[in-house]
Length: 264
View 1: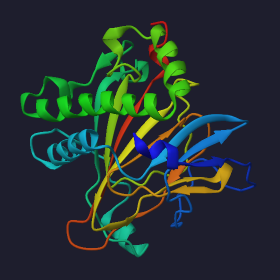
View 2: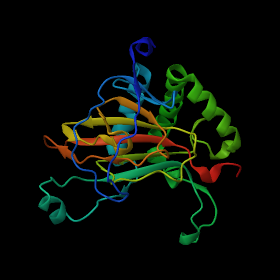
View 3: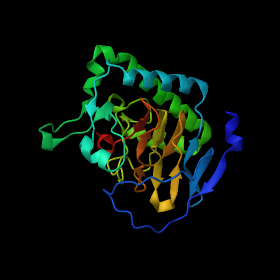
C-alpha cells in the first residue's frame, strides 16, 4: 500500500471546549482532509484515508447498494418530526440503521443473554451481510498494513472474545447508519484499547463529518474514505447531513467491538 509513506503524522493535542454529551453537533467544516495517522502521547491510535483500496471499495459499494434496497430490514432512526427538522432549516431525509453481528444482553428488555442480529436470518439480506463481513476483513488488512501495532494489540484483545461472538476477527458487531448525524456521545460500551472502523459512502450531500472536540478535530467523511479511531476514548459527534440534490445521502458502515463479549 503505497499511501503509507505519504501519510501525514498528526499529533493530537488537548483542546479546551464546553461540549456536553447529548448536545447536537453543529455544522463544522472539516480541518482533517488528507491521509494521516493520529498520534497521542507518542503512540499511533488511528488513521484516516480518503480512498479505500480497490477490493475494499468494491465491497463498500456492494454493501451500500444492498443497504438501500428493499432486501435488508431496517430500524427507523428519525430524530424529531418533519416539522421540527424543517424548522431548523434542514431538509427532511430518511434515516435508518442496520445492525449485524453480536448484540449484548439487554436485561431491561427481558433479554438477559447475548444474541446475534436477526438480520442474519433474513434470506434476502444475505448478500448485504456477506459484503459487510468481507469488508470487515478487508478493513482488518488495512489496519494491519497501516498501523501493525494497533492490529497486533486488537488481535490480542480479541483472544478474549469467543469466536462465535466475533464479526470477522477484530470486531463483534457492525452498524450501518443511513443519514444519521449523531449528537455528542462517547462509545462507553466499546472495548477499551480497541479501534472502530468507519467507512463512508455518500452522494450529493454535505456535512456528516466526525467532530472530536477534545482535539478540535473535524474529519472529512468523504465518499469511499476509511477512518480508524478508538471511539471509546473521546466525546464525538456527527455534523448535520444535508442533501445537495434529490436522493442525496450519507451512509456510514461501522465495525466495532463490544466490552460485553470479553471473557464471555
